[in-house]
Amino acid sequence: MRNRRTRVVLVILMLVFSGIGVIACGSSTTSSLVGKWQPIDEEGYIEFFNNGKFEIQGGYEIISGTYEETGDNQITLTADGQNPEFAEENEQFTLEYSFSGNELILSDGETPVSFRRVD
Image (cartoon, rainbow, N blue to C red; front, side, top):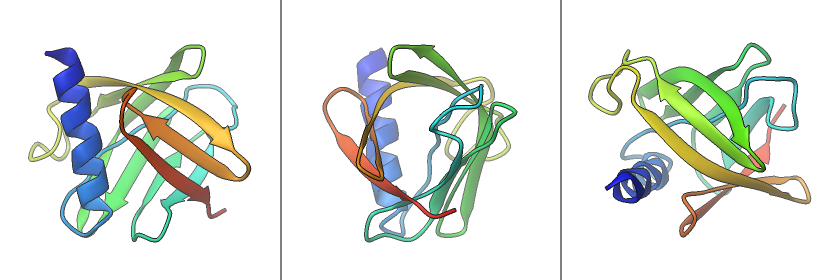
């Protein structure tokens, strides 16, 4: 059931950046993830901060929370519950991440989503 929830989160993420919804991700230490990332050819952004917090904006929705690197090329996102339509408080999602050139690729292990750094 955990993989199904993660997959739903990624689908929501893709829809958000197509103008329909929102979701989140990040890292807790100074890392290559820190910064603002925009999905390729879509509106919105994901921003990872040095203090371990993240913010995702897509359309008119914003999701925020904390993130931490939980393994090799894995991050766990914990929603703060400020936007209950998309994420319950303390709900967690683990995603894989990688870099290709100047792109960040987030994946649930099956569905990759590419972002380009904007700051």
